[in-house]
Amino acid sequence: MTTGNPNMPSLTDLDERSRQIFREIVDTYLATGDPVGSRTLSRREGVGLSPASIRNTMSDLAAIGLLTAPHQSAGRMPTHAGLRLFVDGLLQVGEPSSEDRQAIESCVAPTAAKVSDVLSEASSMLAGLAGGAGLVTTPSRETALKHVEFVPVSAYETLAILVSEDGSVENRMMVAPPGLPASAMVEAGNYLSARLKGRSLKQAAEEIRAELKDRRASLDAAASALVEQGLASWSGGEERALIIRGQSQLLDNVAAAEDLERIRMLFDEIERKEGLIALLDKARNADGVRLFIGAENPLFSLSGSSVIVAPYMDSERRIIGALGVIGPTRLNYARVIPMVDYTARVVGRLLDKSRS
Image (tube, rainbow, N blue to C red; front, side, top):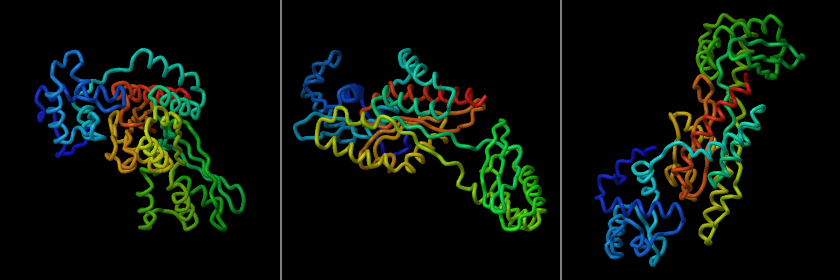
């Protein structure tokens, strides 16, 4: 979960005292949401430093961009860069607690009979346990195909039947090219079945288009037109949906006008569902959980929120979707990160059961 930013401070830039003070500040901030003062820290067990010594260390940490003071007389709180350093270098992430695992299983598992219910419950459960908004993208349909068939419905419509290797069948209505003979439908179906077998539409579409363009396909004009029209109508892929639950929880514990304004901006950002789907899809290129803090993702540059996302997979370890949590930067990362990861594993397992 690193950023790869070479200008960002590293733990090697901090001596033992600075690390200790930095950890104490971040831990306290994540627990309370409030800036942390030197006097408060000096009273913490194990710190053993005077307020003046702590203030000097705080100033040094602020000078390298890890801490900031929201008000002149207030204590310090971590910047987004500080939170990133804490998460990457100091945070200890393990498995979810037994209570969280039980809550995830009990909330999501009973709904396993229906995919939409599994995803909706997962989103609601994440929102409730994490204290933010839960996000889930519906599964992508990139399964390998084994057969394509075209069936005439009327003079103007054709039904495309796509049979996947996992046994699922998808029917798609298409506008029929004028004067399309039944023989062209058979020819087009055989052609696509041969070239799509073992591959998804997304994987094979570009190659098929190139073959048609180069006239290398052994198809007559009518069959070729049907194939091209099919690829065009399917090129947008599946209708991806985003399930969001728990937005009202983001209003909890709003203590100041600037906090309310930040939440308002976050609501505006959440409305850009296409951007959120694209953000969650970034998890599809990761082995596990991904974390975006504040301006690390342009979508949340205004509200400065944090997003924790993880992919969910089928039994063959193919990524089919993603889920996560969005909330303030003071999320309980040590708890939420393993919880998101575990939920993704549970959802993947349940979706496999629902398809079997």
